[in-house]
Image (cartoon, rainbow, N blue to C red; front, side, top):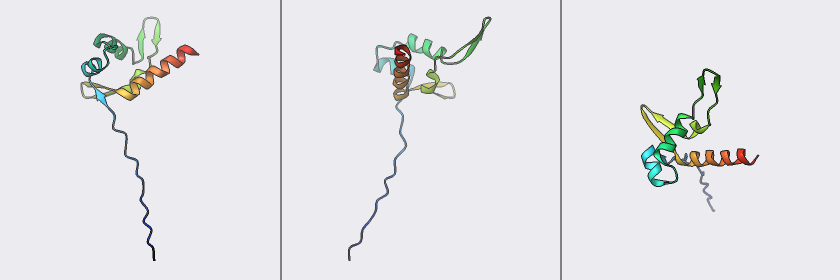
Length: 89
């Protein structure tokens, strides 16, 4: 008699690669710390005397833990691709 065993394939949750602004700019020199800080500043909706200024959408790639701000690398580059698709359209 043959006994068959079934293995359940459990997908493990994706472990994001998180970097500080300094670590990210050192790993990817095309993005300086200043340019990343500017993109982060523009990632939230804000208001001026002329009305609401929309965000750039980068907030999907940002993780805040207390005062520490981390960048999810894969989501950052997905956001870059979205920006390129919008520019092509």
